[in-house]
Image (cartoon, rainbow, N blue to C red; front, side, top):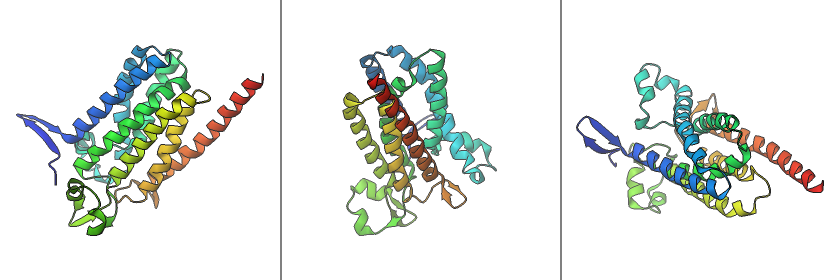
Length: 258
């Protein structure tokens, strides 16, 4: 097992999880800053926006995880804020980030859909990178697999997926690869989009579709009764995106015919 602690300097302990998440935020910010200038948005808005979105996303992700895993934290509330130990739910982060972003965009009179298209590739890239924080913490893994199956993966992944004496699906890796593929698709399709908001909706739909299937492999899913919360939210997002996508497509068609 790889030590989740990267650096210890006196009273300061730096975890690989924190390093990975910081790298994800930095790269996502650089990309969004560049894309803003290419899309006619004042890049300074990106920096100001992220000052709100990043803490809101972290708080939302942690609250979401703690709420749906309350039994593990009810007797130790201090652990509820120990995000360096892992336990950030992406859907909670999306909700927190969305609310903060919506507040900023409305306040400054910006185009919500256009801003969403600028940020979407950064978000999915951050998710692709962030999943490797799960790798170092040995979380977000799947059901057990055979030695023959896991041997298809690099040795360092094999060793890290040996948990409790059994090898497990590297579900974090599946999702990281899927997110990276979605990221590439969004960048390629961006030049051919038909209306503002299309890239953001493709992101939400494609990420949710991949998450739905990968979540079915995981052993640490947050549950709501017999239902995996992430799968439920993914289905709801896909349905919602289809509805809004249809509305925007229809509106675009009407505007072209005028």
